[in-house]
Length: 117
Length: 451
Image (cartoon, rainbow over all chains, first blue to last red):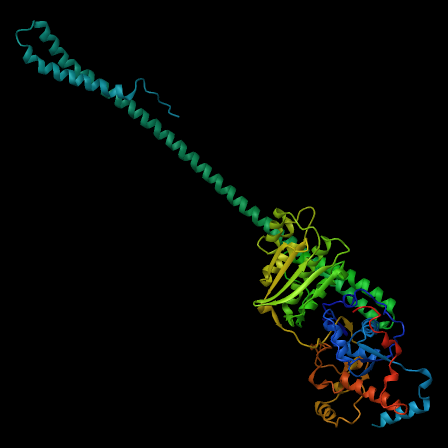
């Protein structure tokens, strides 16, 4: 069933989060960077394939919005699943301190450099 | 019955003539013996008797034969009457049978047309429920960072899913296959999760066990519906504060889903009745539902016949009922390790860059040295993608399975590695490693919600 971008799936989103739509932590923003914690811990048996797929996708450093795009899911839904995994210690949030952000000139230079590639 | 009642019993009627004949023979035999010794009157008497007795016998015999003939004729008439009656009755019976057949055919036609109408209407209702689900998904996509919108969307989605299930139950009770179909195989735990999403108390369902098996596409929808009905029964028949346990196992001949509730069970007579319905041995159509329709197990039975499932209901060790569904091996396959799609969603034009480029270029990009910076993903509008879409009639490929030309040269790992390298380089000055970039809250593992 693919009409105009809509993909249906038998498993509904509310089942994945147990009906919760609000993440357990309110610090998650679409640009928040995430990375799977690679400490050799296995996910508990109750964790489904969905949590495993999420962790597998997030083996590198990805922003929440990117993660959602790769999983083809809404950001708000991924935020709930991600915050559970962060709570469980399976995902790490990389801080993006505001004062440390490069200034606009540097960003523009980077953009020009990227375009030049 | 008999209209002719003979004056004498037939035995007497036959006996008297023969006595007369015997008397005559005696008289004729006695004549020479009597001779001259006897008085002449005795001779006369004997002679007269010898003459008269045969006459009497003849008269009697002819009377008897007349009576017999009359009785025979009466019997013939009676037989003809009976035959006519029989003929009439046969005729009436035949007419009644014909009328009954016509009536039955008319009823069957009527029932078939009613069922067709019910199926058509139910399919419409189901389609509109799915449309509601789609709109809810689009709403989330438009406000994709708003949890309140997600909450509302989930409630709408949940209500519509139950709505669609009830409509599809009606279709099943009319003996038709489900209207919804799925192309891709679905892992067994996801089948139970999908089923849980269609009942009211989905939060009470606890799934355990993952044998790494998936259900083939054509059986996904019926099986999800079967499990949904069994879960619905289980949650309704047990206290609201108890869990319903769904355990998935692999067995020699396929896979088994066991559903246990913690209710009070069922009395044996009722249990044997519903077992026959759930196993598909007793078919329950839409006309047999009765005043308080209990559609769940009838639907289970219908699909059990379609898919050759073995469904059984027994007493659970938890005190309630245990429903066991055996899925035959021809409906299962080895599950793919990475699910392509996790849940419903709306594609908003996310495409890999190589998707719009010719294939050789894509391979060239892939063959770049790994040290080189990979290409960043781009967002393109749906319209642009639709403009470059393949030939008409060819639907857009499912998002999970891109066409070969769009082989993701930029996987999540690569993108992640790239951003990771970017931040590592940024924080190069303080330290090569980035332990200080982890948020402190990571240290509070385990104190938070138990997953």
